Length: 221
Length: 364
Ligand SMILES: Nc1ncnc2c1ncn2[C@@H]1O[C@H](COP(=O)(O)OP(=O)(O)O)[C@@H](O)[C@H]1O
Ligand SMILES: [Mg+2]
Image (tube, rainbow over all chains, first blue to last red; front, side):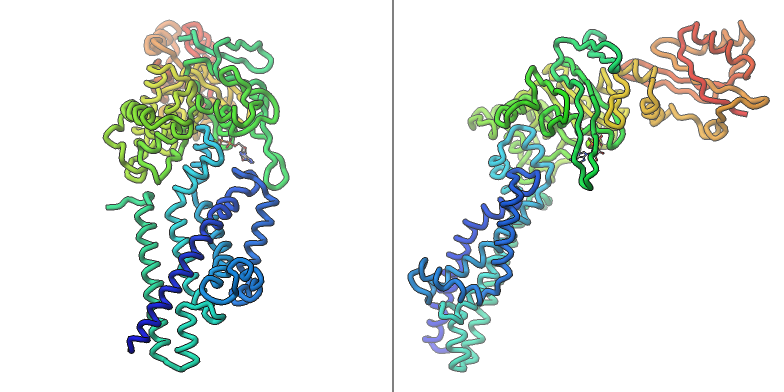
């Protein structure tokens, strides 16, 4: 493998990591409150607003069921508005974030719904406000689940980020398509796949370890 | 001992609510909408007074409405009708913020402890204090005090998963006491524990009641809990309080079927199977009447039965017997068989000697 190739791979890996990291951060910033809201706004719950809950639920589902590649194309005007352009790494962050936000929201909702209702009851009984219950009970108790959810989201984002390569988004996917496919360089294609596999493994391992460390429900020897 | 009795008769009797009741339910009813559109009435016109500094137990079968009753006291449920007065304020009428504030003076413990798995024992106890806005130094000092009170100083940095059931409930108790409440609500707090651990938790509650003067309202389906700790009891069935008063009185002279059934659960109270199986409601030729004799306190039956034999020449046939302790006082039960023709004479004789009698049936 030539030094130029290695250079190309290193650059593309950097682009991928950049896209995924920024998209994951922004999507978590939006997805966390959204997930908490979804988990606590049903009938009879802490922030009961069943109608708003249902409307948001429908929007979240609609976004999640739109194929990613169609989402990328469909929101090009919006991407231009936010990023100033519709091609390149920064532009790719916009659809990545939009696809990841509802996904993360649902994962966080799930993690929070796993928290024992008895804890909410106990917190209400000693006079906690709904917001205190979210901050001091629900999120800390759901944290291992949230970390696992975010790990899954980052892994999915790695896959999606390879897809935005197809529409000029840069990163490893872009490299694989331009060199591996269009210029028919199988070793480049292979290298891209290997790097992606290593990244996914690394993210999953770190996420699992962190979640296990945070989970005090099971005894650690 | 009778000084703090908050005895309430049924709705026909005049209510004698002592002025110093810290918790008062006045004709409280609660109806839930129900999932299938069929409303569920969990409580019907329940009146109850818990005197300051007392331990009142509410006993009832599953689904009787116990949890609903206790949740009304700290406003986790709102009554459909009636009033819930705690420490002078009408809980149901309080706006949310005031209610949250009021809850700091009403601690609660639970069957499944409801501790945060992500916090250590000390951090769990600190939680209500953090929520109430105490500063760090105050929290630290108070948590140490509470750990010592419940005997868990050496477990302060343990997570709930590293504690036994009894230790978890001790953390639960410490957490409930953190904000120095005036009332402690206990919803089946020992139901998930073995008898020995139950005993130690009840001892702790009794000590807290005694030392801190904390009023305790506890609900349970276990007779042993009532017998060991409560001075007063209310029996609840189908959302209504069917009997209430001094524990010893209620359980030595049970008036209601449900109350009797709780007593029957107790070991030693049940009839031996060979008697139970042959028991008939009507006398038959040659049958014996079966009488349950209850003796309270120091009464001894032996001399009475001996005198029955000597003075009246009536021989009794002892079928079973036991001595229990209820609310710290001995209470004995003896089941005997007597010939049908002397049943009336025997009952008169026993009652004259201050013994409670109940005819259970007849055996051939
Ligand atoms: N939130 C609720 N919605 C509908 N029905 C309820 C609710 N809470 C309790 N109930 C019903 O009220 C009755 C009494 O329940 P509960 O107070 O939990 O009884 P206990 O604690 O004595 O077992 C039961 O029939 C139960 O199904
Ligand atoms: Mg219950």
